[in-house]
Image (cartoon, rainbow, N blue to C red; front, side, top):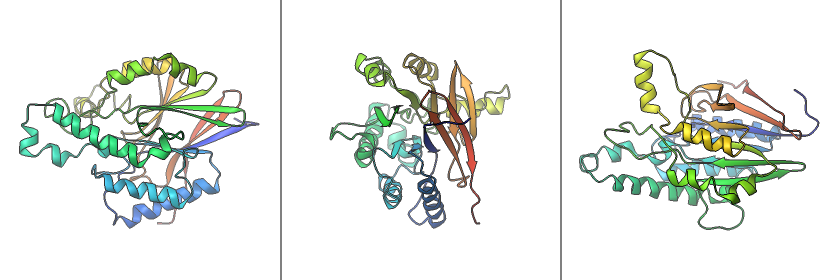
Length: 292
């Protein structure tokens, strides 16, 4: 598909940095960011699990790499968190936390990490100086005649020994779903190409095999149909996500979902989205020839 006027977006997900000493992954990240700059992509989207251990200090690896390549800028990059960014399984499974019947403490720990995430990546979330801005958010960008909007939500749910034992199940909060229906949101999106952003996958395996069903449950996007309904009502053209480490495109309810796979396990591969001024778009997965 050819476009006279277009916007191009690079999509990565699930980087899973576990340490500042991971020189291999850092070097690969620098290589792919340099390639994005060389290819003159208009925007970069990272759909969560930037790190592996929910240690906020490790997010600076991402920030610093983006800064080295001139990409730590509101107009150039958009990020959202994943469950590995916000849930520290080791902390949650400590005896006194795991047996605490008060779920509010788990929600408070998640909220505090989200607050820290919003603070560190604040300049990628808003450009108007709003100190309270953070995930969820709506971001509208204009590239000449083409206007894009990202509707970004948090799908990370608190750890629970019964309902979320590995911290990988997710949902969108009731408050977020209600906020997305506000008239000012619809007004902001009017006349734009709307892209939904979330971390959790609408679809995992989805087979009849018991082992797949068990895995699906641990990774489940619990209120995915409510999220789908919200995206449809807002006129979303597609949704970008991660979580399930597969590079795939599938359609649900008339909306294409694009899974960005995992940069950690496939650092040579990424998604490329091209959007034309007439609203047409195309997508492909790009494989770089990287030296081992």
